[in-house]
Length: 207
Image (tube, rainbow, N blue to C red; front, side, top):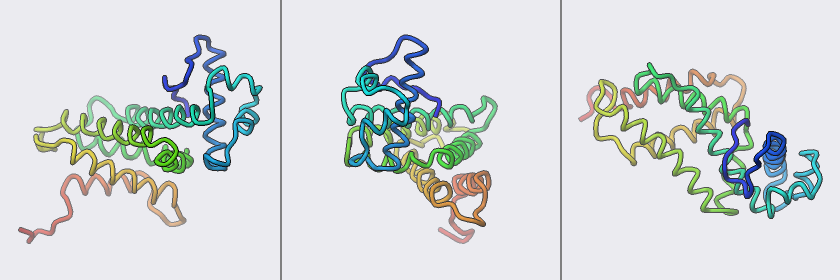
């Protein structure tokens, strides 16, 4: 992942320092994803990053600290993927389709994100909750920005944002993490979800 957040204990001021911090976060992602939080070690992280143990403590005080930073870093990377996929001329529903497609592609490339975020529920509940609240807030802002248009109602808010996020998270789990031969591609999955937002699932004779 290329995004760098301000969740590190000590933000480096030099390009060299930023590259070292990036190495540590990427190494931590691999270590936590492979071993889980409790079995992962600082020495394992530094070995993967190719840096000295003392270098780790220049940036983080503990395994817990880098885990917290990693959750924030991943959360920002997810948001950045969506932002980069959204174009100014997109209608509100196209925005949601593009954001979901970007997330599905991100999750397929960074499968570790699900395990690490799931572990955060028990290792650092505040980071876990903040991750989902940030995503829901971004979706809510998008829904409100498009509200009242031809595509979206004007009364959309937090409940709808969490519902959309739930769709996205579980589609990512199914089609990125649990992907199997014969699955539709990410663009097809994103389009199917978008049809659900556009027309719903009620039949023509529903009350």
